[in-house]
Each structure stands twice: as structure tokens, then as C-alpha cells.
Image 1 (cartoon, each protein chain N blue to C red):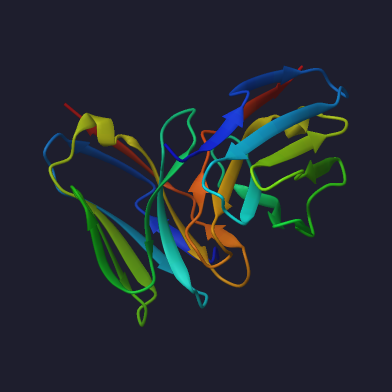
Image 2: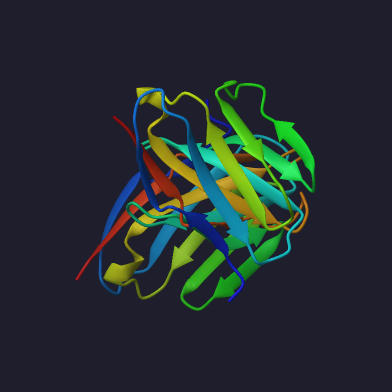
Length: 108
Length: 112
């Protein structure tokens, strides 16, 4: 069993839909990252969370430390949001443990 | 703008021919990381520098080395690339270990 699990693995939505990507982890963490990776591209850090909720524009990230669960929400989705979204948790030291990613496709 | 820069974005090398990938940062961060990401897989940490202190991951092959001549630059050297080393190589930085990591655009390495 992976220490970080994301669901769904693949998600297809229509433009304008509200999207939720989930991340569950089984280890103690100091922080959780949500990352975005476009095809053939580098990784962009969207959020780093250790508690509560953060919002950047149409993106919202929440974390429940007791339940070891985080969600990434995208409101009013757009085709340019199509990318792989990766959940990564910081455990001890410098190590980030990555989930396998969620491939999001938003159709016009 | 402050950023993490990787050069080149695409690198082709021959089997067994040494290759060096470059990362620079204008963030003045203490920590620089190198990750390897193979197709459809999660990034894998190879090593990181905390200032001048080099920290190697236990399962990083000896074929991979790194240099950090100053705060701004960090290099990844692959001494004898094999076909299995073809991947995206990502550089990241953070102010300190506990802080958020900022990723560069990556260098896609092809080994022929």
C-alpha cells in the first residue's frame, strides 16, 4: 500500500464544472503539498498546507490532519486546468513522498 | 522575477557519454534538490544540498553525482548514462528543509 494515495487516478470534466481531487496518507507528516504538472513540463507548487484551508483564485486546498486526508478543489474549471495534479507529503527531513498523481482533462 | 532555472530544457546524450545538467536559482534558498521522474511515475529524490552539505539518498546509483559551487548553482552529473537514465530531471529549492519547495521546469534527458 502506498503511503500517499490519490483518487481518482483520471478525471474528465466539462468546462465550468467543480472538481475535487482527494489525497489520503498513512504516515505522520509535517506538511502536504499540492503540485501541478503540465505535459512535458516542470512542476508548479500550488499549495503547502499543514492545517486548515488555503485559497488561490479558483483553487482551494483543505487538509484534515486527524483524518489524514486532503482535498484539492477547482471551481469553474477551464481547459487550461488540464494537467496532472500531485499530492506530496513531507515526512522526516527533506523527503517528499509523492502520490501517483491525478490526470485531469477539462473539455471545452 | 525570482525563479528556478534549468538548462538545457532538452538534452540528448549517447550511451556512456558523461552529461551535466544545470540548475540555478535567484531565490537565495539554502536547499537545492535533484529529482528524477520517469514517464508516468512520481518524482524520485536523488539527493539534496543543504548549503554545502551533500545528502545522498540511499538508493541513488553511484553513476549520479552532484556539485554545488555556490548558493545559486547546482549541477547533476551523470558519469555513464544508460538507457534507463532517460527521464525528466527536476531541480527544486527551498529556504530550509521545512519550507515549501519551488520546482524548475525540468530537463528532459534522452539517451541514444
